[in-house]
Image (cartoon, rainbow, N blue to C red):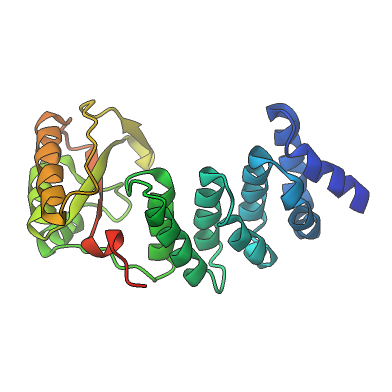
Length: 244
């Protein structure tokens, strides 16, 4: 059985079909497969490691924690991002400090804060209780008007939310728009097509103003309806300049 599991682990680096089948079988084997996956991680390429992370998340075995922490030092930014998300999803003990180091490393590499890796690490830190997003009072009240399972704020309040966040010195990175259909199902819908880039070397106040301008323009052109919700993502000054 051990040799069979080891072969499956190596197949995680195969073409999509082979890797998918190996992933499914490893998930079916469950906890018994975890030690072999951990041992085989260093020999896998980026695709194989990403697939292994998916197995870890499905099996939910805490023994994968140290391996996931190790992947935060990968040369592959997507592997680092997925490892961070998995650490939070699995609530791995001892993950907070490695995640903080990984986030500082992102900033030292000058990775833009709106890219997926720092976004994923911030999400992980928030989920683990190590980061508290700034939620201004008006934004909090407007969120409370939506159902608990709503994917954001009612889109009719987009302009109010943008101004409230900017008035409290928050930089809006981007917004996602969702439509809720029957049975509570949601799907993403296209927004305005606007795509802006911020100069992260600029002073914080300038970033706040620029993000407000672009976000207000987006809000003015965004779809609106009782079934449409907006989910903005924003950061605080402390996310760009974290304490060491």
